[in-house]
View 1 (cartoon, rainbow, N blue to C red):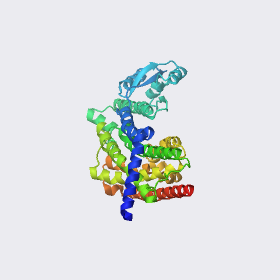
View 2 (cartoon, rainbow, N blue to C red; view 1 turned 30 degrees about the vertical axis):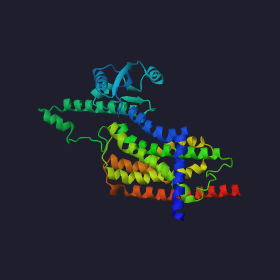
View 3 (cartoon, one colour; view 1 turned 180 degrees about the vertical axis):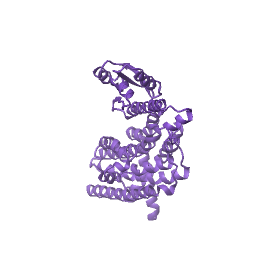
View 4 (cartoon, rainbow, N blue to C red; view 1 turned 90 degrees about the vertical axis):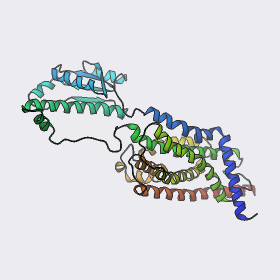
Length: 395
């Protein structure tokens, strides 16, 4: 048998053994199949409403004037806020917040209407529960918009113009329309979930590969990652045989996460199939070889769960989606370049949410290919070391 044919047979054998081990191991099967299928559906379903509505607030009205009651009525009529309680003082309002009956407090001071009547600036204090940014945004933005609307009404009443057109020009000389770019609804799901989907793809893949490696070490008495078998005689055969197994599985999972889940929940879908294919091929390859490299650190199958779950939230911040990329310090930006999810999430959002072309995401594609090649080389080094240790133990 020729050397090339033997290499193909060994690679196919390793691929088949790895595929069998995946479907025989319940833990690996959960992370490679069930979690990528179910977790995106649960996460997308929770945030499918995009924005929060009728956030309960408590009002401390110390003024009891017509102007303060007008402010309360306008806030209660808004779609984002619901006046649930009235309190006599701030201590009572804080008690309601601590019991999670309300998410914020509107404090109207006793001199509110008096200051406005003297042509001075009136103040209304807003206190918010910062545990959830979406409720904070709804409470604060509602108070700001209502105060601006009441200010326009007061300005028109004092201007004493003859026509409504003159009143409209006096309060808004320049007409404008506020449309959020790439996210018209201003929703959390459309803004953040695309990056979460790419992060799920990486984390589940690394978890599955790590658990499989931990199982292999626990199974063999010498604690080696590479079995003592004639088919496991070449480093490249081992690496490519295992990589083909995971690439085949996550080619399906990647298509499911990148194409089907956004359509099911009506997330933005502006990228063409060819553009997504150009991104997903290097991304999945980089994730596979990254997972195989990380698997060298896994002594027991539970270790990889502790490692990857710990870094999940920091990796989401480092993508630059939930926190501005320009505000991330240079050191942490350098750390983020080690993970495929950083460039995968950025490229996916620019293609699918912002409508960018492949040429616009060339830096992300280039970095993903560099990561795929670099981690492939590291995986070969790791498995080569394991192969030498297995041979030494056999001798």
